Image (cartoon, rainbow, N blue to C red; front, side, top):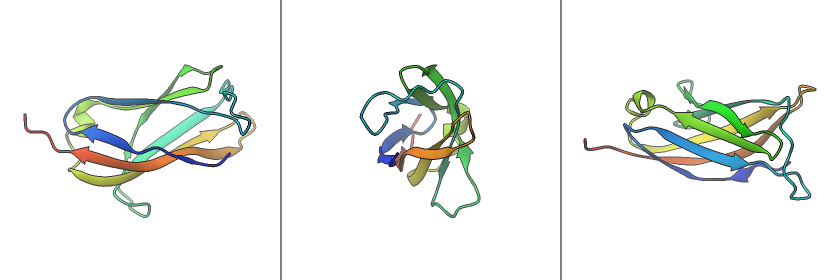
Length: 110
């Protein structure tokens, strides 16, 4: 599975969520039953500081995975460009990176 680039826009100081549908190579939805996932946002790939997205599975059978950050977290992220990815671990411990991209954090005024 090749990583798909999906760029995100995150507004500082408010709740954020994005839902992705993970597909097999034949374009059918990947059944995510038994999978775990992690997702992080960093200033650049080698940065040691990061914020972890809360990852959930709204519809495992149809390949849906959601990443989210609460407003208490987005408030602490400075405006600018960042990178993120989503790593899935299958029930047999095989890791894949189906989603990656850039995140533009827009500073808030209020």
